[in-house]
Length: 552
Ligand code: NOJ
Image (cartoon, rainbow, N blue to C red; front, side, top):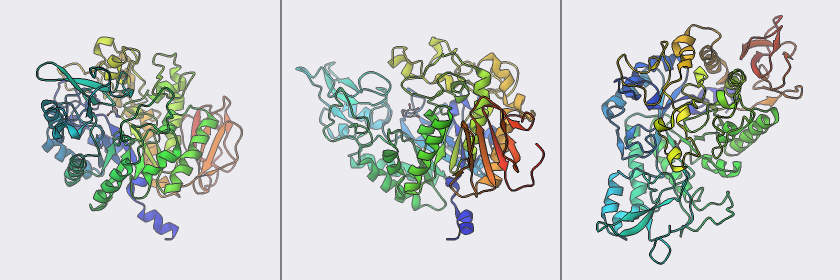
């Protein structure tokens, strides 16, 4: 295929800008203080005008909300907190009408303890067929009083909970890699496989364009559920990246491929090595996956360049498009992280409350936005990134809702700080998030958000929102058809410079000195105003190398 034909036929998901909608914090249509589908529908024009290509919705299914909806009780219905299935249908159709594709979140590793299957399992006898869809097993010790193995929950504490029989006597244990309200499903069971294939078809028939796969590296468990041991090899854990999981994705891929248009999977694949990660992106498995290595990377020249190189190499081996992610609903907002001494992200050590230079964080957040949008592949925008919202670290303990807070005994304050409802307009909470007279937002918004609301930034050509709009428009018009590779350009130490096609270049200044632009280049967009024609520290510029130079 010639290069020009390849450019025209490239599927949308290889270059898409995807906006993550955390529904409960996006916009509240019915005034109960919680975001919902009516709220999202009312704000679709905002998302269209922002210039993204697709929306990814965090789980919106029926759920007791023990983990923000990642505990699904019914995969085929919408939680009443968010709306109805009919509204979801309308929302999908309206999004399509605005040229926005829709990706829903599929949670296959575990369901809710209120799911029909788990209730049946608990009511059934030990060893019964109903329990085989999960991992029920007797405990160790003389009376089965010890968990069956040494696995720990990702949320803290043992990954096992003991059941109690109808007579009150303690019984078997069940596995939950996350909260006890999230029992792990047994992916060796044919009914589990058949059920999820049916759920995929259900949403594909409702018109969705793809699925984000929660804990995509999970699902399969090593036979016999062996202990991890005191010094585990993190590349060979018995509950993640077990080979059998790849068969699941091969069968799912056949399903999406059988539907018209390009329907896609994006995997939440957190694994220690690029080799393990890339296996999920083989041509008959998932289409793409979140680049957590980039998300976790410090804002430092060498580290960023290494991650970019490693990312491009790992994806090239399997022909998949890379993705670039700065924040999501599980991490510390990058406008805060980048203003700290340690700018990396570590899920196990979030360093909440560390001293922050907000102005520095903001400068770097603006630069990082341009960098990610200039790189080949897809890009994710977590709601509020486009407003440069900071992590909210002042939520009183009594209002925190994330199960990690309770399960870690308060040691980990959890992920609520990046999930605070968006500020849309006005000078005080709820900042247009809810209609007048509504209940308080489910998490309190900081008073300072008045200056960062959508309305406050909308008309300001220097705002972060304006930068995102300009960058997304230019990216769509000019970058989406460029080759899916980059070439590094010679640059001073501490400066990252690359071109995509010889005429478009991106320059990032990680040094603490202003940087002259390359001779013959014309700035297209910069994350900070040029100072005497020079690029400020912690700033990024998009340059045209083919136009006659302007005297910048
Ligand atoms: C990853 C999701 O992003 C997170 O929010 C959730 O708690 C876990 N998976 C468990 O489903």
